[in-house]
Image 1 (tube, one colour):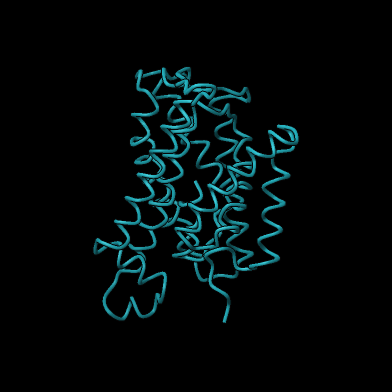
Image 2 (cartoon, helix red, strand yellow):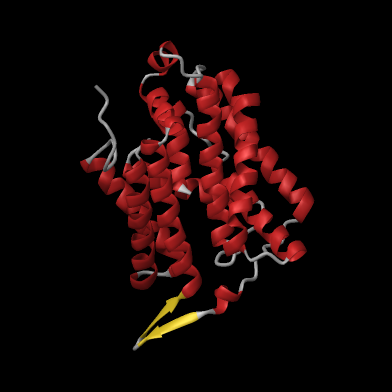
Length: 268
């Protein structure tokens, strides 16, 4: 979830406030594939990612591309509008009731002595690592990946050497949306969701990428692990309802020590 958000910001400097709602739509796509086609979300996440890639590329070409050089407040208002539209369309189509996707892995547990391991969460974590590593390989070992990094570093320089920056931006936004679509499908058997869930997911995403450093792929991954561990410890030692207190306390602490985040670059 955070990797997709930090990729979009790192390439285009656009803060995607619709990121959480894109993840909710990934969850609902997994639900439709499970109920209508009998496809397990741990197999159907690739289709959810593909669908969100197309949607993300279309949003970038049709909307974001028009204001990519505009002031940040215009970008924020646009993406908030996209988020509201996505949330209300989901409300019309699926209703307000919380749902959860059923999967055989959802009830599977491995016992290791006095400990037990939730297989669904373990598989989700493993797939997240694989997808993050695959994205890193794509960005550093393919021509399109190098063009994305070049456009992120210097769009005018990339344009001068013949890079189609508009196509690169569309691909980057689509890949970021695909990441969050896959994330939505993978957690749909674990977390109940409804159309309004997008806001809390967006807040969590921003918390993670700010801790790791806006625009940093390793930072998004490390930030995600830190936030997860902080919230788990908060749920154990405080209360489950206060677990976010631990993660936001971590955010404040890191911003005091490193205002740019753990892997972020300081402004020159």
